[in-house]
Length: 365
Figure 1 (spheres, rainbow, N blue to C red):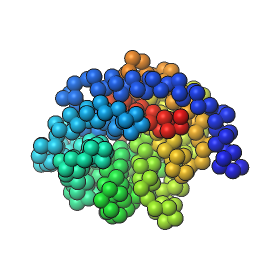
Figure 2: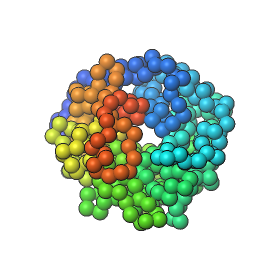
Figure 3: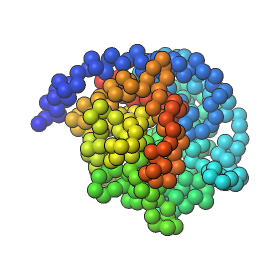
Figure 4: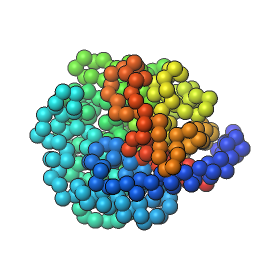
């Protein structure tokens, strides 16, 4: 079947109107966000994802209010000391991450995207500073895999999205192929240790001291991976071995995701356990990653109905009055039983992932 026929099949299976009917809800989430106090959002991973989602909503709408809000956020931090933002020099306390924690990297990705839309040297300098730390200051395994913080000795799938979009985006902007290569290498290394060979899906964490990974195919963790693949492949040269390697990785994961989506369209917090609860941030992330990979022609358009079905389920059940619900709280790599008990609510990372998914849905309009 030709690509045109495949696309025609997708449109007949899930027509454009079904996505259009939720356009207003997508915009309502962005509008609700910019009505909240920007000072309440710290320089942390969930807030970074939220601002990335807002910027991608701006790309589609060209609504200057969204960038105005992002600039207010960025200016809270551009004058701060970088070591302070990255938690350098601190010590781990109990279950809290230690110095160089990767959760403080993703806001730099949002601020890099802001720089591309509204150039300001301070924005670029912040993004460069964080990327430089990732390249030369972050903990790495013997193979070069990025640790979750200095002294963790662990690969967490979350780390991929904290690093890969920033490295690949800055690599493209500043013609630094070594940054893009590093992002691609991270995905290959993490896949070597965390992708389940049977399903193509990912475990949460691998410890390079014990050589063991955690149990359970965590839903949001797979969202971090798929989004990282999409954002990295976007800037890579086709026809190269690294591009082909990432494409094969994405193909395997997408096949596993197709097999675990529930009848309503959601993915669950433990992907292969239908008894675990449906989870909105995972579903939004996987919608974004799937549609972007199709748009980049990495994946075939036969995956479009899967993503549209997820978008419909998200909007019908988890979005009301501009608020995205059904999002699990911060989740450590403590296994299947723990994933099932994390409380659900509204979280910054769920809001951001939802807006990101909407931006890709909007490209199909």
